[in-house]
Image (cartoon, rainbow, N blue to C red; front, side, top):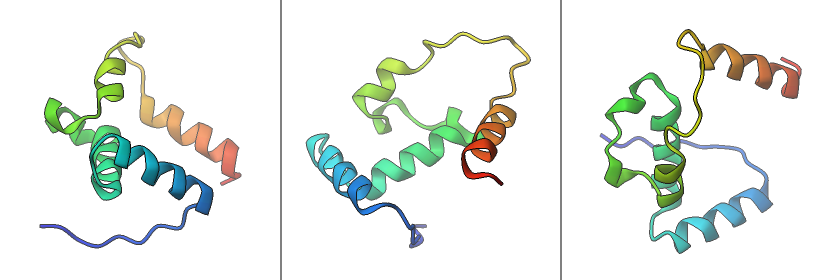
Length: 84
């Protein structure tokens, strides 16, 4: 089931993202949905066909420690960036 989501994003970013999505032959909504799938716990359930070419190429190139907690690091970095 699809649900509408409203996001507030800088105009320039939206314009660039729309152009990128068009070049890749997908909608901006699908591109955002794929990104969300990728960064959530269910990212393993995203099929290869749903990923963009660039994401497919990047997948698995970074090697980390086995106990690496990317969510913790992401939270820390976003907190630094946005002062939360």
